Amino acid sequence: MVERRELALKTFRAAANNISHMEFDGILTYGAPLQLASIAKFAALPTLRSLVLSAEYQVFISSRATALADILQQIEGLEVLSIDSGTGQFFEDASASAAWQGTQLTTLRKLTLRADEAKVFAFAAHLAPQLESLEVSLSPYIVVDSAKERVSIPSLRHLRLTGSSLCGLAITHVDLSSLSSLAIHIDSSPTASVASTDLLPDRLVFPVDLQLNLSVHSLLLLDDYDALEVRLVASGVELEYDASIAPLAPYSPRSDSSVREPAGETSAVRYAAVVDTLEWAEHRVQRLYAEGDVEGMQELAEAVKKVAERKMLERL
Image 1 (spheres, rainbow, N blue to C red):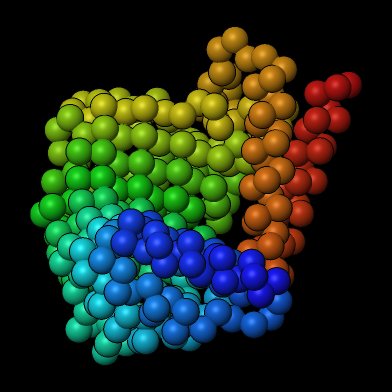
Image 2: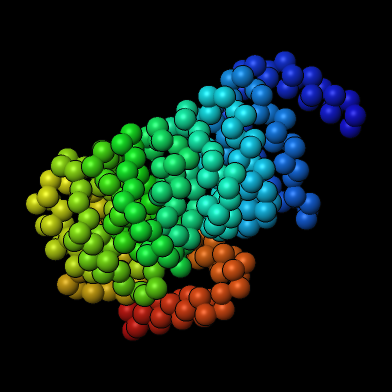
């Protein structure tokens, strides 16, 4: 064991000047959080450009948010940063921290965060003024009215939002004029159906020729898609709707006026849809359990029950 450790250290030292990307995944290991000093050791790597920090739920990252800000400022030339603490707790702690309020990563070009509040966009604008790509995973319980001031990131070209059906409401205060692409993937909603006017409110102003990729999970139903499509196309937006995870009967409720059956659907497509749904449901249950959301778990159980009932009815 000692010989292997020495060999690993020797190999690492030999390649240290060539390391450009590092990932710290599953920071909680057997109940013992990784010490922040372990990450600090790599801050001096001259070629480090990309850093991914991922933890199960809200361990470690949120409680050490202030110290992490100091470490990130030591990494010269950092261009890509991803911080996922499993919930929005990291952002909540960091946004209230004086250390983070005074932190700017001027070389950062791509940022990935998870958040519970719409003011995450103002946080990102301050943290990385030269940001070109932003990915935000929004909690189903996001506070959309937490942002008051208009947010502008002139260098931002690509924005990706995942999670809550309130994504559109969360960016109504964000200047989108610099965007060339916007991707929205919805996998959670307070209701079984998602109103297109809530998903993308009329007051949102998109730049002409914007590439908009929209997808909604197969357990959810997008209402008034046709009206949404007409509105976006009329404003000069190039819309791409991902039908591969659109509602697929018999695995979700059907509405003849708003759901389009995928053309040429095969058993392989149906199987893929079921696998996707099961994976989503497993992740969703774990998140609800971690947050102690009993009501959310009950709603999910009711949704699964309705799907099973529909499958039985369609077989009759």
